[in-house]
Picture (cartoon, helix red, strand yellow):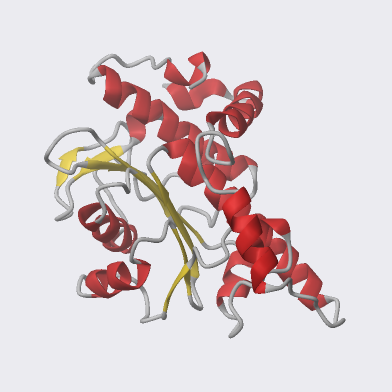
Length: 259
């Protein structure tokens, strides 16, 4: 991880939590930088080390471009605020964010970071009966590796959690039908770069289909080969290099996320 991402002004937390807070705040600024935000809505969460399954989430009221390491709220999977963030929205958490993220964090030991977006392209593909097609390299990275969950309404009802987790299974990416996108990873960089690839795939598909011409999906054999070649590993798209490159971009714009 970039040395820039490891610095934090506030020294209240353990070394691991300090690092994760700054890394998560950087992720929020990256999503803002890429133009994937929906005002104060949607969430990126990261689990804090320890047996309690506490996780960090954005306060309900700040734009992604305003998130800092100290403004993040620490909650448990029951929704109890363990530690409010610094600022006017310190103890406020969006119930819709808690429902999805708590379910995934609670069920998957490997889900250290969970990203959820409502981008135009992602939501558009989520509304397509065909789902994600193997049209581009980015799409084929997810071939046979993406889950689907049918829309049940605003995600504020706790009993949807088990069904969402059932549909997710062992996959690390999901299209929430008529809703948006979800990725998870062992690390913040892994989940963010996976979302980058999934969002790109959706942008490309939406653009191709909007052209009105007949699209040309690749064969299952080619799509499977690409998925194997581009597995999300430390040596591939999961690696820190792309994430750190994005961190440098937001550092140049505004390094206040570290506060």
